Image 1 (cartoon, rainbow, N blue to C red):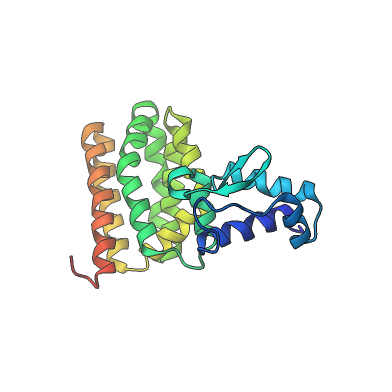
Image 2 (image 1 turned 60 degrees about the vertical axis):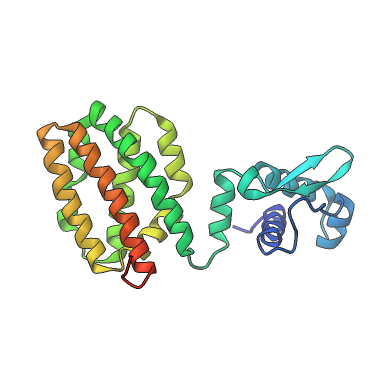
Length: 229
């Protein structure tokens, strides 16, 4: 499918913001000037600007050109998604941020899912025995677990958050699981987690999840430091 002109323009402007060509609080050109520069009609420019504002990159001003936002302060989930879509390889610091987010939310939606659908959660782990010992397949399976558990929790917001990061999550996880010891740690984690779930000990299952999320963060920081803390 041919890409819309407004999508191309909004991506070009967001790249200029990320690259520093458009600074925080700088004014964009007027709609007329942007239309002339991109050789499109003003409705196309207006559509691109509306998308940029929706995703937190700019703020519109009545009767004046939009201004560039501080996207870390004024952005939203789509801002992060756009940032990482512009990266050929996910930066290490973004993986740290994502792993920190997992520490905060993963134990909670797992607990909710276990309280409401414990047997269904157990069934999700059964196919893991057949997963190939390969970074991609581990990443894909781990994503499937997280998404399905979030779906089984009582709060639909968790699933919306995860779905916003699907492609990024898998790319991030594949990079993480290229290290064999990280795959071994996941296998051990699943064994311990399933024991507590089968026993019906939800508090210990929740603590095991939190411990593993913190371990993943520590292991990644070790990898970034050449294997040292």
